[in-house]
Picture (cartoon, rainbow, N blue to C red):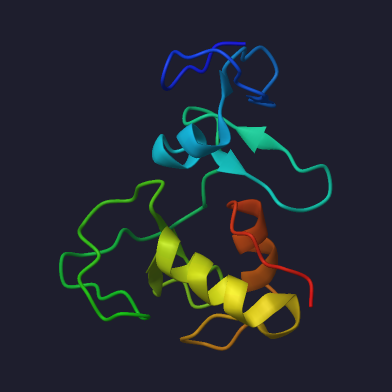
Length: 133
């Protein structure tokens, strides 16, 4: 298979959306907005078919990311995610991924509202790897 991102052969991951024939390499996936779900069936999705969050409000220019306290910007992208419990706490995907790897499934929760029940399943669905410890 040829990778839709780089055009090289050897792409071994395919989008799980019915009718989509895109395949990609693992390193190309994260660079091009693909999502890999690290639970149950371990499904993967291309940039066009990846899961999206049901978000009521977009981050404003003043919105601060909670982990490193830097501006988020004013748009939703595959690089940002929001807590489904408090709905106002935004994270850069890479930042929350780092917290998830350190915390593991037993301790991973929203750093702002401390919710685990809604937060953990949503982060898994959005492609955040949360190790079982």
